[in-house]
Image (cartoon, rainbow, N blue to C red):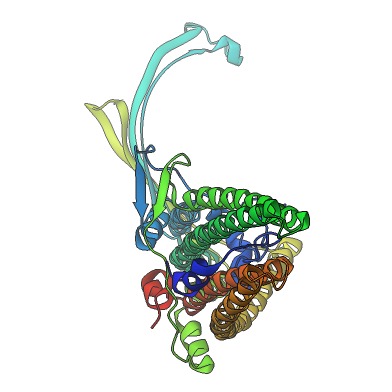
Length: 486
């Protein structure tokens, strides 16, 4: 337990614990550029989100729940998420769709060859056609022919189709890079959910310790009241504290169970599977990170930025394709086959046709296509510029969060020690009959709050390091270096 060392000192001596009004550990805030995609939030309550669930918060369930408790490490949780998280699966499907669109655009540049086999049998009523010829039967037939033929059509020169194909290549590459970026988002989502469950478990242990000491305090106050050495108020105050802590424990256990469900949802585990997390993510300071160097690294390695760059190039090609709609196109059509009464009495025939076509008047469509393509290009360029700025902000914010959380860990650890000393002094004064248990209650409240803040700061520090790995674009490959220190 990565905060047990700071807590054990006061657990041995504590007599009374006062309820803390609800958990104070907040969910860490993920980078702004990812919050919308993953459904991330910095809210500290466990209330259902008002918005729709993000794909990265869901998954495709793999297998059935097993008997017993599943021991789950952080690495295994992330690997499961990389296989079963809905965001990864949908990104893979989008990549396949982009590959299909690229092939469709390619076909416009390649020859199209079709084959056909016709077997025709006909009868003709000459009188129905207005022909009445003496000594010629009114009905002719049946007669027919057999035709085996291949046809070819090819757009030899089509600049617009070429530009559209090049645009589809850039869009496919952008979709592929987005699928790679989704792995970083899954790592961030699953890692944050895993760390949150760890902090919930720590809070439960903390509150359980507070309940135990509150029970001891209640027993002591009741005994003192029966002996006539303490007023009834002390016993009532101790009983309120004890029952309030029991309520806090129920709330903490409920939040722990809900966060385990959320963790299972991110990595495709059956929701009825019992879990035991095997890692505790100990505190490990991250060495000083130069913000400017980190920003350069992020701009060079972030897959979502590279994907948007490909989309900009694709939009540029679409704009060129809209301009090229004004250019002439050169096409060829031809066929060759064998036709006759039957294959024994047949002969080869064929034809060839070259076509040069160009628009004479289609100005509204041509201008509309050009304006639409230009608008999309301007949007992509603006988004690219904004993303560069957002990545810069994500990196710098993550570094600031790490530094602030590290200082909070130090201060919170010191506060736990100081509050423990104050509690010990108040307990001794109460045991000696110098004061009532109000001072003990106030001191125990300070210890409980300090312990909660220590848990919160450890969680914030680890998640901030994971967010930095995501901001740098190395989350799914190097997350261990950041969560465990570096």
